[in-house]
Amino acid sequence: MVGVGTKIRIYESDTSDATNILDAPLGSARPVTKRLLVDLADLGLDPIDNIEGMTWGPPLPTGERTLVLVSDDNFADQQITQVVALAVR
Image (cartoon, rainbow, N blue to C red; front, top):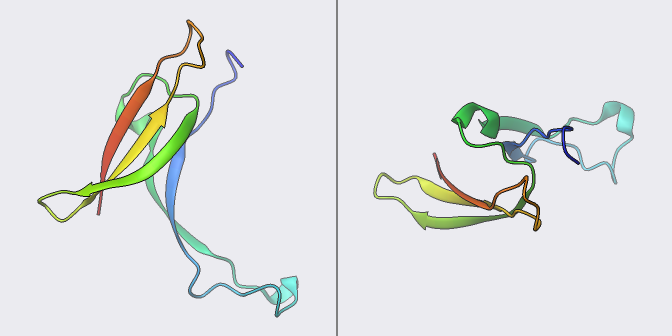
């Protein structure tokens, strides 16, 4: 929808200390922890409104992994198709 806007943030999540709520009441549950990897609004890209695909790409020589995102234009003049590659530590 034009003019509404979206926020696209990618998080790393860790479930290792979280409670399996099938085995415990919700009141005593420990949540999943998460760490913000990137807020796409901080990258200076053209506005992205519909990330539709995400996959790991090849490792970089620095040891980082590439994370590849794709958005399409939905056949709309107001949108663009973008491929974004990020380095993830």
